[in-house]
Amino acid sequence: MDASRAKIDQKALANLRLRVVVAIAGIVAILGALQAGRMAFAVVIAAICGLALGEFFALARQHHCRPNEVLGVAVGCALPLAAVLYNQAGLVFVLAAATVLTLLWYLSFSGTNLTDMAMTLFGTAYVGLLLSFLVLIDGLGKGTQLVLLVLVGTWINDTVAYLGGVALGKRKLAPDVSPGKTWEGTIIGAAATVGALGAMVFVTYLDTVERMILGGTIAAAAVIGDLAESRIKRELGVKDAGRRIPGHGGFLDRFDSLLFVSPASYYVLTALFKLR
Image (cartoon, rainbow, N blue to C red; front, side, top):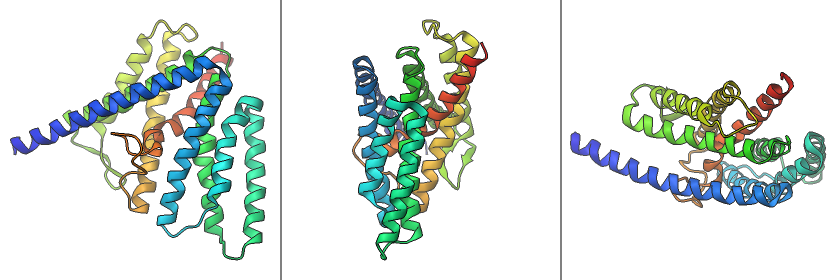
């Protein structure tokens, strides 16, 4: 039993090392895009949306759905660009246009059905809309610090929760949705995120209490985002959305937490700035 446990732990640690290396490489790449300007960052987010949506629609096809992938990917990529150009108004316009175009597609082809139309619109909103809030955070006028704070906070939460779950996890958080996620790992990850962000005194745009509030928001939203994607994958009968990122699966697997963290962080940051 001990030998079996040791093998599991070694495998988990090896996977963790790979996840950390890939995550750091991703953060460095995103940092480079942030330094290049808001439009460059929006283009990178648009590329991530396109790749993640490709995975989402591939999963939908496995479940006998036929979403309009060309329209869905195009709209998903357009959303971050609309966010950098026109902020929230741009997101509303693109989503409204996408709804009209999807309805026209539905009316024009008798082979389509409501499920196909719904999956097309849901995919663009689930991935493209939610991830576009990272671009809106970048537009809050506080430089790149806030985006990096959100990204690093999410990475800390995911990594520490994973490690804490492997080492101490006993009670399942949601066994029917994500059997590997535990209450112990979730609590340890949340505590680490709140503590780490609170200690980042070099982030001058937020005081200690504000950073800790943001840390709590990130921890809560990350859990919801991870469980949401796990629920989708479980219903579709797959373990990973893709295999493009070593140690993480696909782009949808890597950014599932950020899909919920991004809008939650944006609205919390906006509220904190207004309360000053």
